[in-house]
Image 1 (cartoon, rainbow, N blue to C red):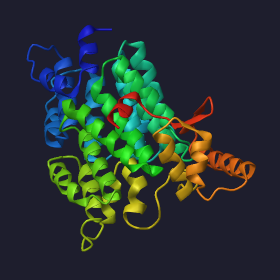
Image 2 (cartoon, helix red, strand yellow):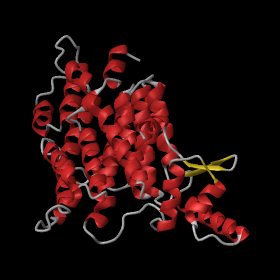
Image 3 (cartoon, one colour):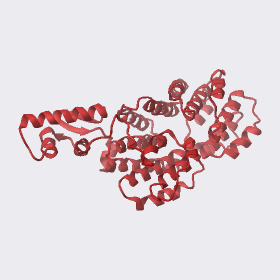
Image 4 (cartoon, rainbow, N blue to C red):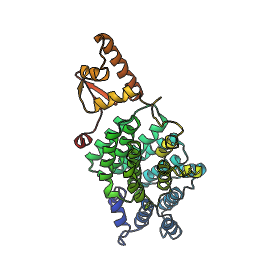
Length: 371
């Protein structure tokens, strides 16, 4: 692979902004650096100008530029994605094609094709020695799969992705994955732990401040704070998110604002702009029904078990005494405990672990250090 292309594809958001101003870059590398920079900034006007004034004759770059512009404008249709699927791309731009197709199918709410596209992108990035972008494509495939399999817990998957991001020293991507892991803990009611993870996510995403991922993490933290009843801390986060040029962030901010100002009315037209994770939260934020990934939300006793185990590892009988303070027959209590553990594991596989008779909740070392 051309090392110059490798450098651009693997670059962080801030590095891409610098490359986009490097007049020494040859074509079509220079044009594509500008395309990526404008896309990451959410600058549709600049993307439009680039597409109308492209000086490169590289058809792959031209197609990707127009596809990224359509993604930012939220104007994609399945027929256009199908046309691009049939085009022959070369080199690492083949991986870029599949990555953009994944985003496109995601927008069109076709998670099966989004999942397949992201998996193809991950394969081609890796084959062209782009491990950082390959990991991001794999992460997007996991997120798409989580929508296809809503009853499965993906905590272990996000933990594996975070470990991989550390191995390649990609702190920003670790922050992106931490936000999703925080969401998993929010869903099962471990809100204090979810908040710590959200804080850690934002800290790591400082290097990509201003990107859509940063603003999403910001609003996710605001959502957790709302559920904790700490609304006074939410307004500063919502104010900062107003700087975002992304329609998806604008829609999510207005959705959260409904929980702070009962006079506000939700505009259903904004739902098309929401990222999938915010579409999942929509019913609970509108007060329609709880947003859960499992078949039902955790009961009070199940949440108590998870909270106790999170501070573990905890011996089985210590948990039994705290869960059932009224006491009773030891065999009956042990059977009740086993049934409780079975229910939690059925709802949230991989969340509750047991080693040598001591129970704990799956966690990350970095998160553990925060608590």
